[in-house]
Image 1 (cartoon, rainbow, N blue to C red):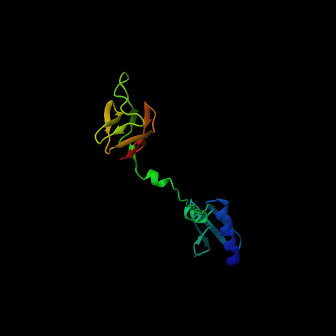
Image 2: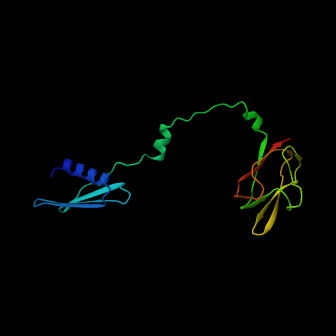
Image 3: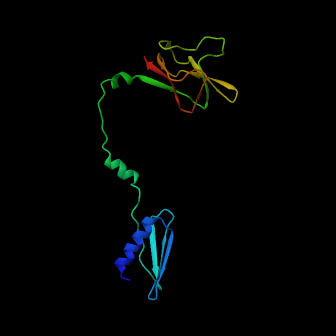
Length: 163
């Protein structure tokens, strides 16, 4: 068997997904072993080892996929309007409440002016009610979470237009 035939056999085995193939005739004995992820193949004949070959990857790499996808960038004139928006995020996992208790009024509404230190909402975690205070002064633009909804760490809760 010639080296070219062995190389073709190695490529075939790598593509097939088999982990090990043994071929034996009167003249020679060959064992082809592949890694579990099919990234490299090693073949061995009677008493000598052939150089390892890198099998072709069945899936494109992330870098190759990104390189083939053109990134389109658009200039948004509205971006200047969002430059002064601040996102208030949840500091913990828990349940978002707009009111201090069911019979009380909400802390803030859309359009309300707030100042630094005002309580915006409550996040309940492990039976503890944590008041979320504003770190900026401004105007409430949007409330992003429904009352009594579960929230994740760092999840946006409110949008504030900084004044």
